[in-house]
Amino acid sequence: MTKWTREQLNPDMKHPLEQLVGVIGMLAILRYGYLFIDTDKTRSEILIWLVIGFAVIYVVEQALKKAARYLPIVRKRFLIPIYVILLVLFLASFRVPRETVETVRQFLGI
Picture 1 (cartoon, rainbow, N blue to C red):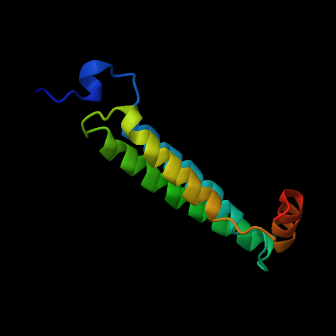
Picture 2 (picture 1 turned 90 degrees about the vertical axis):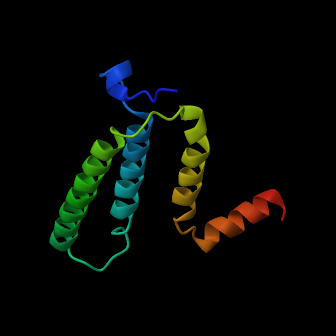
C-alpha cells in the first residue's frame, strides 16, 4: 500500500499533524502568557519575558510544523483523543480559587 503525502493529494491542504502542532503551540502561548498574571515583575520585565517566550514557542512550532509535513497522513479521527487529552491537560493546569470551589459545591449541594 502506498503512503500518501500532503503534496501528492493536495498541496494546499494542511497536514493533520501540522494542525495538531498548531493547536499545541496556541495552547502553549496561552499557558505561558497566563504565568505572568500574578507576578511581582515590573511591566517592562514581563514584556521582555513575553516577547522572548513567544518567539521561542513560535520558532519551535514552525520547526515542528515543517517536520510534520514530511510524515505520512494520519486520519483526523485518530487524532481526536489526542485533542481531548490536550484540552483536559490545558484546562487542568490552571489553579481554581478556593472560593470558586466552595461556591460550586454549595450550588451543587455537595
